[in-house]
Amino acid sequence: MKTYPMDVRLSKTLFNSDDTHPHIVIDPEQCVTCPDDYACLRNCPAERYTWNEEKQRVVFDHVGCLECGNCRLVCSRLYEGAKGYDWSYPKQAMGVVYREG
Ligand code: SF4
Ligand code: SF4
Image (tube, rainbow, N blue to C red; front, side, top):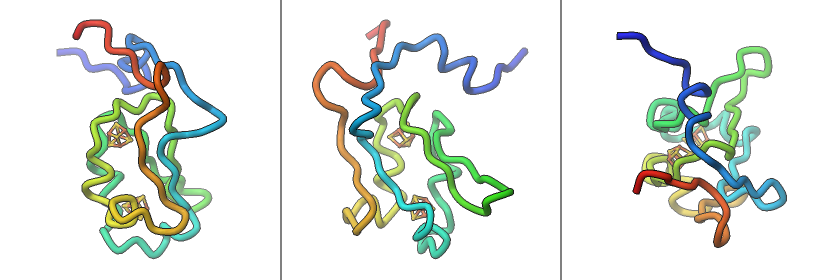
Protein backbone atom coordinates (compact mmCIF):
# COMPACT_ATOMS: atom_id res chain seq x y z
CA MET A 1 0.00 0.00 0.00
CA LYS A 2 1.35 3.38 -0.96
CA THR A 3 1.72 5.85 1.89
CA TYR A 4 1.80 9.61 1.60
CA PRO A 5 3.67 12.19 3.69
CA MET A 6 1.59 13.82 6.42
CA ASP A 7 1.49 17.22 4.72
CA VAL A 8 0.02 15.62 1.60
CA ARG A 9 -2.61 13.83 3.66
CA LEU A 10 -3.48 16.99 5.60
CA SER A 11 -3.85 18.93 2.35
CA LYS A 12 -7.10 17.02 1.80
CA THR A 13 -8.54 18.63 4.92
CA LEU A 14 -9.52 22.27 5.23
CA PHE A 15 -8.04 24.50 7.94
CA ASN A 16 -9.04 28.05 8.80
CA SER A 17 -5.90 28.86 10.69
CA ASP A 18 -5.93 31.70 13.18
CA ASP A 19 -2.40 32.95 12.77
CA THR A 20 -2.86 35.88 15.14
CA HIS A 21 -3.97 33.64 18.03
CA PRO A 22 -2.59 30.09 17.73
CA HIS A 23 -4.78 27.86 19.88
CA ILE A 24 -1.80 25.88 21.15
CA VAL A 25 1.32 27.56 22.43
CA ILE A 26 4.51 25.93 23.65
CA ASP A 27 7.84 27.38 24.69
CA PRO A 28 10.58 25.56 22.76
CA GLU A 29 13.23 27.05 25.05
CA GLN A 30 11.64 25.45 28.10
CA CYS A 31 10.92 22.27 26.18
CA VAL A 32 14.61 21.36 26.39
CA THR A 33 13.87 20.37 30.00
CA CYS A 34 10.79 18.37 29.03
CA PRO A 35 9.55 16.33 32.00
CA ASP A 36 7.57 14.01 29.70
CA ASP A 37 10.30 12.53 27.51
CA TYR A 38 9.18 14.61 24.53
CA ALA A 39 5.88 12.76 24.38
CA CYS A 40 4.42 15.34 22.00
CA LEU A 41 6.75 14.11 19.25
CA ARG A 42 5.23 10.62 19.40
CA ASN A 43 1.59 11.35 20.11
CA CYS A 44 0.34 13.89 17.60
CA PRO A 45 -1.57 12.12 14.81
CA ALA A 46 -0.98 15.10 12.55
CA GLU A 47 2.78 15.26 13.29
CA ARG A 48 2.56 18.92 14.28
CA TYR A 49 5.44 18.56 16.73
CA THR A 50 8.80 17.90 15.13
CA TRP A 51 12.40 17.90 16.23
CA ASN A 52 14.69 20.44 14.57
CA GLU A 53 18.12 18.90 14.56
CA GLU A 54 19.91 22.11 13.71
CA LYS A 55 18.29 24.15 16.48
CA GLN A 56 18.06 21.18 18.84
CA ARG A 57 14.52 22.27 19.61
CA VAL A 58 10.95 21.07 19.33
CA VAL A 59 9.08 22.94 16.63
CA PHE A 60 5.30 23.22 16.68
CA ASP A 61 2.99 24.23 13.84
CA HIS A 62 -0.64 24.84 14.82
CA VAL A 63 -1.78 24.80 11.19
CA GLY A 64 -2.94 21.28 10.47
CA CYS A 65 -3.89 20.52 14.07
CA LEU A 66 -6.81 18.11 14.18
CA GLU A 67 -7.86 19.29 17.69
CA CYS A 68 -7.80 15.79 19.09
CA GLY A 69 -6.36 16.86 22.44
CA ASN A 70 -3.64 14.21 22.63
CA CYS A 71 -0.82 16.68 23.20
CA ARG A 72 -2.67 18.20 26.13
CA LEU A 73 -2.94 14.79 27.73
CA VAL A 74 0.67 13.72 27.27
CA CYS A 75 2.36 17.05 28.00
CA SER A 76 2.07 17.97 31.67
CA ARG A 77 2.95 21.60 30.93
CA LEU A 78 0.14 21.93 28.41
CA TYR A 79 -2.22 20.06 30.71
CA GLU A 80 -1.44 22.29 33.66
CA GLY A 81 -1.24 25.48 31.60
CA ALA A 82 2.28 26.16 32.77
CA LYS A 83 3.81 29.55 31.99
CA GLY A 84 4.58 29.64 28.28
CA TYR A 85 2.17 26.81 27.46
CA ASP A 86 -1.45 27.02 26.49
CA TRP A 87 -4.01 24.70 24.96
CA SER A 88 -7.46 25.78 23.84
CA TYR A 89 -9.81 25.17 20.98
CA PRO A 90 -9.66 27.68 18.12
CA LYS A 91 -12.18 30.50 18.09
CA GLN A 92 -15.52 29.81 16.49
CA ALA A 93 -15.29 29.09 12.73
CA MET A 94 -11.51 28.73 12.97
CA GLY A 95 -9.40 25.60 12.98
CA VAL A 96 -10.01 22.30 11.28
CA VAL A 97 -13.08 21.85 9.08
CA TYR A 98 -14.13 18.23 8.96
CA ARG A 99 -15.86 17.72 5.67
CA GLU A 100 -17.08 14.18 6.17
CA GLY A 101 -18.61 14.39 9.63
S1 SF4 B 1 5.84 17.22 25.84
FE1 SF4 B 1 5.39 19.37 26.28
S2 SF4 B 1 7.17 20.15 27.42
FE2 SF4 B 1 7.74 18.20 26.44
S3 SF4 B 1 8.69 18.82 24.50
FE3 SF4 B 1 6.52 18.42 24.10
S4 SF4 B 1 5.50 20.43 24.31
FE4 SF4 B 1 7.52 20.58 25.27
S1 SF4 C 1 -4.50 18.59 19.47
FE1 SF4 C 1 -3.98 16.62 18.45
S2 SF4 C 1 -3.60 17.13 16.31
FE2 SF4 C 1 -3.51 19.03 17.47
S3 SF4 C 1 -1.36 19.33 17.94
FE3 SF4 C 1 -2.28 18.28 19.70
S4 SF4 C 1 -1.97 16.09 19.31
FE4 SF4 C 1 -1.63 17.17 17.37
